[in-house]
Every structure is written in structure tokens, then in C-alpha cells.
Picture 1: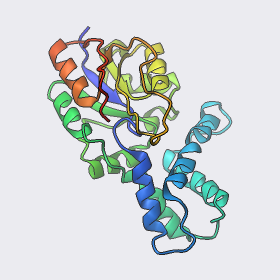
Picture 2: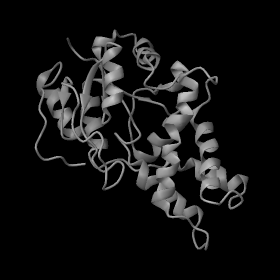
Picture 3: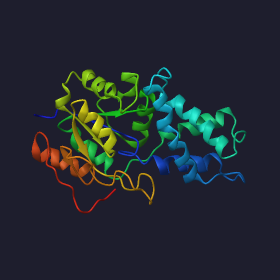
Picture 4: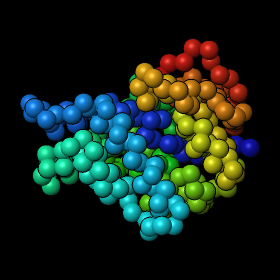
Length: 250
């Protein structure tokens, strides 16, 4: 079955959220005695991500765009670091835009461009359309369109998010491949009927990362990075091979 479109997880898979957020934290607190450890702050902020979305997935709260959840989570993290009064409203809003300023991994842009020569490419992210658009401009990600949570008004790994992306492209799920560095994301996409592509990002969570270092299922394409995935897709015409390279380069 020919794959006509690839949709992508973005945070962690295509961009380095940890160093990007930490850089903006350093900028927000530059020269201040109360400056927190920037990487620890970034990790704590990211740790609030899934619990905030879970309340929406579970039906305890209506849909709220990730931009707003990030700002709510920022307030929680500032409080946890004893910094509740450290930033005024405009400064908090500016720091919240850190998620629009995340650097791409070195293989992301060339890999996406190579895939886009033959197939539709689009994000299927929990980020809002606004966030994904600004991040694409910052990181140089050339999408054909922006899909994801705002389209479905739900959050991954809810099947509605993957299926809404396929419906927006007027493609059956089996002609769409979800690409991610996260096994949980791919398992949910596969359960919804999509094809799957995996490569690891062993430094997404820093040097002590223990998760998503290897594929946990026999995904349709298993690669070392996005450029390798693009090579496999180009060589296969349809679904690529099942190759996990011994040397992983993030």
C-alpha cells in the first residue's frame, strides 16, 4: 500500500524542546540572583505537559489549546521553584513563547525536505496551529499543512487526533504514516489504522534518558534518524524496510 502522507510528532521527535526551553529560561532570568537551573526548570515544565492534557482527554475539562495549558503549567512550575512573583504578566507571556523557539535536530530539516519531494508532510502535534506555525518558521520546517490537536480538539494519544488528520487529507489511515520517536504515540496511531515510522532521540530528555531508546514493536519503518527514514522510504516506494541501525545518531 503506497504511503501518500507522513504526519509527525514534533516535540522531541523533530525539535529539541529541552535545550530550547532552557535557553529561553536563561534569557528570562539573565543577570538575576533568583535564576533557576534552566534545564531543571525545562524538565519540570515538560513534566506538567501530559497531566494537563490528560484532564482534557479524560473529559474532566473541555478542549484548551496547548498555548494556554503551557502558560498554566508555567505558573505551577514558577510556584514550585519559589518564583511565583518573579515574572510579571508580559514576562510570563514572553517566556511561554519558548515553545515556539525550539531548535531542530540536525537531521530534521534535510529529512523533511527529502520526504516532501514525493509525499505530503504535516505535523500531527499536540501543539496548536498557531504554535506549530510559528515553530515551523523559527525552525525552518516546510510543511504542506498543519494538523493535530486543534483539528481534532483533543490530544494524542486519543485516536481522534490521528483519524482527524487522515480525514483532513482525505486519505484512509492505511495510506498515512505516523512518524515519531515515541513508542506510545506510534502504538496509538497503529491502533487507529495508520502505518508507523520510528527513530530514537536518545538525548531528548538529557544524558540520563531511559525511555524510547529502542522500538517496542515491529513498526513498518525503523530508522536511525529522519534522513535514514527518508532514504528507506525513497528506496521502498511504499512502506520501507525494518532496519534498526546499530549506531544511533541524534
